[in-house]
Image (cartoon, rainbow, N blue to C red):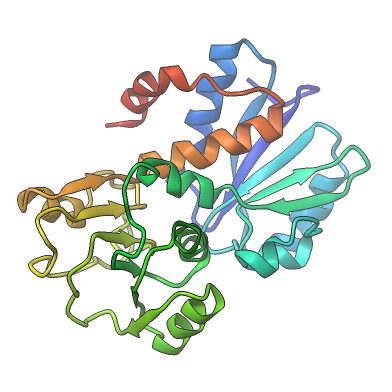
Length: 273
């Protein structure tokens, strides 16, 4: 399909070629028989302002999803009517209003939390790797779930400590090489382990046998972290769960229709090499 006079949305980032979002949204559009399109747009940090100025003037553009490295920078280019800047501090979804206004919101938190909603994490220790835009959404969701304490591993320990304080989470910020504490849930909320990024090397031995390992990276889908966790017999959650979950929220906002989630297995098969 071409955009032409039909509504369309996009995913922006730098890099962007790896994004599976177009496959997801086009699958849902086709399944529902809706006119529309969804595509990738390579946008650099320097090009954000120009990108949004041009898209704001296009009445067919419904909005965009936002990925690395723009989730925090986008706040400077959109209206924050829902207080996302103060709560999560990162935007992964921008919506165009009929008058051309651009509204920032976040669907990452809901997308992240959906696969672990049935876990009893209240008061249980959690480890989170990363302190970027995705990590902010993860920490926001975990704070609402009442977890604790949280150990945050990040290259910049001060940044990690500031995030724990921002979300009022008890715990410690440690460097990436620090040993893992026993934890009920380990979340990789960083780009480490993603194709083209440095690996994430963690010794999972301290985790108890009932721990869950959750990697939000989906390219590759089978990360070294998940492979190590499965080798230990631990339950795992891969990046497609969060990707599809956050996309479902965004799809309804973009196209004013609920995606057919009963076809998730078909979608996963399409997304899995």
